[in-house]
Image (cartoon, rainbow, N blue to C red; front, side, top):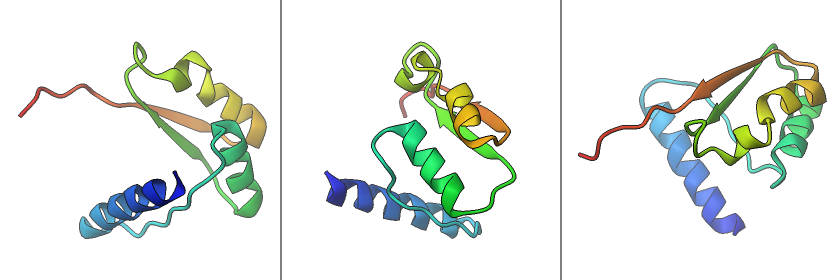
Length: 88
């Protein structure tokens, strides 16, 4: 639920700040298009970056999230696809 998402977000933000990035984050709507639309309405952004899993496993790519997010917000969207890594 919300507590697990908040814990995951805080951990991710701490790791990114640990490498020197100035970053903020928040838990958004469970619907990703609504979440990006809400964020775009609450702030001023030049671009949106959508990061997904590989196209063969990403449910967001099957739903065409990058173009839906661009349409919903009017922002240019850069899509970044995660690379599979070998187990350590």
